[in-house]
Length: 402
Image (cartoon, rainbow, N blue to C red):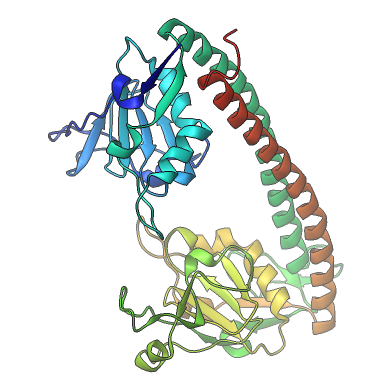
C-alpha cells in the first residue's frame, strides 16, 4: 500500500457532447448518500449545451452541498449537469469501482465538505477534491477484490433496506385506502346517493354536500422579488409548496419583512389551523396545516375559517383523494390546479360530531402506522450507517483484503 493524492490516479475529464444525443443526468436525479439514481428516474436522450460527457466507468460526485454525498457510477455514456463532477480512474493505479466506493466513503465526503466554499449553498470543485490523500491505497488487484466484496455486501444491505422502504410504502397505501373509506362513508349502512364530484362514488343520504367556496374562506399569496434584501429574513413566516409535506408546519425555511407585506397586497396572514393545498407541478395536491399564523406564496391555496366542515375531516378528505386532484390538473408535463378548482370541490360529510369521530379514528390509525414507519426507517438508517462504515474501513485500509 502507498499514499497518494486523488489527482495522481484520477482525472477530471470535461468533454462536451458536441450535439450528440445522450441520456441526461441532473444533480437532482442522483439520490443523496445512496450511490444510485433517485428511484423512478427515467433518463431522457437529449442534446444539451453546457453539459459534460461521462463515459462508462466514470464516477460522478455532486459539487453542490457535498454533504449530501451524491455519487453515481456510470454504466453507459451520458451527459450530465456541470454541478456533477466527473472523475475517471486511470486503470493502472486506480480501479473504477474502487473509485466509486472511495467517493462514497466518509473521509472523502468530509474532505469535500471541509474544502467547499459558501455558507448557504456550499460547493466543492476538482481543485479541492483532487488534493484528498489516501494514505493506504492498495494495489489495483486488491482494489478490485475489495470492490467486488463491497458490491456483494452493499447489494445485500440495499435489498434489506428496500424491504423496509416497501413496508413504509405499503403501510401508507393501506392507510390511504382506509382513510378514503372513512371520509366517504363506505362503511355506513343505509341508502346512498351521488352528490359529490364525478369521480366520487355514492355517499350516505344522511350526509350533506358541502362546497368549499361556501364553507371556507379561501386565499393565496405572492412571492416577493427574489434576492431583494428588503423583503426577506424578516419576522414573518412565508410558506412555499416545497414545505407542503402532508403535516403540520410550525416554521418555514424563509421569512419575510413588514416591507414585503406592505409592498404585495396578495400577502396576508392566515390563521393557525388553516389548510394549505399545493396547486402546481410536482407537489400538486400535497397538503400542510398551519401550526402558526403564516403567509404563503402564489402556488398555494389556503382554506380557513370553516363553517360546517371540520378542518381535519376536510384535510383527510383531500389527503385521501390526492390522485383524483392530480387528474384534475391542467397543463401538459406540468399539471396545475387552480384556486377556482379547489373552491368548486363538493365534499359530502356527516354532522360535525360524526366528522370528529371519523377524525379520531383516523388519528389513532395514523399513530399506529407512524410507529411502524419509524421502526422501518430506523432499520434503514442503521443499515446505511453499517454500509458507510464498511465502505470506509475497506477503502482506507482499516480492514484486511479478503
